[in-house]
Image 1 (spheres, rainbow, N blue to C red):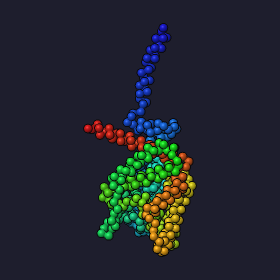
Image 2 (image 1 turned 90 degrees about the vertical axis):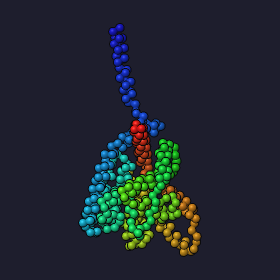
Image 3 (image 1 turned 180 degrees about the vertical axis):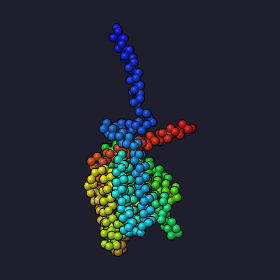
Image 4 (image 1 turned 120 degrees about the horizontal axis):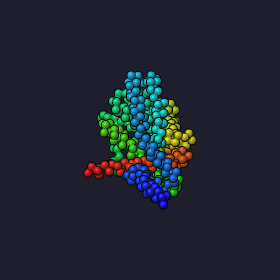
Amino acid sequence: MWARTLSLKYTDNSRPPQRARQRTLLPDPSSSSAVLDRVTERQTPAVQCRWRQVATAMEFLLDSIPMVSLAAAVAVLYARVSSSLLRPGLPRLVALLPLFPFLAAAPLALTSSAIVRGTAAFFLTWLCAFKLALLAAGRGPLDPALPVLPFVFTSLLPVKLRPSGAGAPKAKPLPSLLSCAAKVAVIAAILRLYQYNARLHPYARRAVYGVHIYCFLDLFFPCIAAAAGALGMETEPQFDRPYLASSLRDFWGRRWNLMVSAVLRPSVYDPVRARAGSPAGVLATFLVSGLMHEGMVYYLSLRRPDGGMTAFFLLHGACCVAEGWCARRWAARGWPSPPRAVATVIVVVFVAGTAFWLFFPPLCKDGGEEKLLEEWAAVAAFFLDAGRKINGIVRSTD
C-alpha cells in the first residue's frame, strides 16, 4: 500500500513538468523555425536538418558582413588617397598592389552562406579589382577627384555613375515599380516551385534557374541604383531587357550585365584590339570573362573549377566573331536582315541551350545544386519570419 501511494505520488508530480517541457519545445508559429518547418515538411530529415543549419547560420552572417564591408571601404579609401598623390602608371600600380590579395580573400570570410560569398566575390574580387586596375592606369569609372561617398559607392558596388553635363547621353529609365513587383512575384513563385524541384526535368530546372538569376539581378541592381539616387548619384542601368536581344553581340554588349562590359571593354577588349584586331579582342574578353566566372564558381562551391564556364564563354565569343563576319557579308550582298522576332528567338534558344550544356552543370554538380536550393529556402523562411514580425509590430501599434 505504501509503495502504491508513493508510485501514484511520483507519477502525479512528474507529469505536469513533462507536459510543460513539451509545450516549451513546440515552435512559435511566428518564428522562422515554424516557417521553415512548413516549408520543409515534405523533405527528408537530413534535408530538414541542413535547412535549419542554414537558417541558423544566416543569423550569424550579420556579424561578418559589416566587418568585410568596413574593411573593403577602408581599402578603397586608401586607393583614393594614394591615387590622388601618385600619377597613373607604375607608381600608382605599386601602391595599389596590396589591395588585390585582400579583395581576393575578403569574400572567403563570409563562411555562412555561399550566395552571399559569391555575391561579395562578384563585387570585390571581380568588379572592384578591375576598377582599381583601371584606376592604376588612369582609366575606367574611378577617379580620385570624385567625392568620398561616390568613390566608395562606385568602387564597391556594381554601379556606373552617369556622366553629367550638356553633352552627356540621355539616361535610360530604371525599371518601374510595377516591373520590380512582377520580378518579386516571379521569385516568390520560383521559391515555391523549388519544393517540387526533384519532379522537374533537369532542363526545366535549369530554365527556372536562369529566370531566377535574371529576376534576382535585375531586381537587386535597381535597388542599389535607388540607394545611389537617394544619395544624390545618378547611375546607369545594368540590364536592358536581354530577352529582346536580336543578336549575341546585342545580348552581351548592350543588354546583359552592362557593368561587366563597362570594365572588360577598357581593360581587355580595347588593348587587345589595338594590337591584334577586333576578333582577337572579342575572344580575349570572353576568355577573361570565362576565367572570372570560374573564380565565381569556386567562391560559391569552394571546389576546383572544371573549365565549363570558360568553355561556355569562349564558345559565345567565337560565335560573336562569326556572327559579325556573317552580318558584314550579309549586308555587303544586300540581303535583307531576318525578322527581329525570329532573330530574338534564335538568340534566346542558343543562350539557353548552351547554358544548359555548359553554364549550369558546374554550379549543380557535387551537391552544389542542393546546397544553393537549401539556402534559398532559408532566405524565403527568413523573409517570411521578418514579414510576420513587422506585421505584428504594426498591428500592436494600431
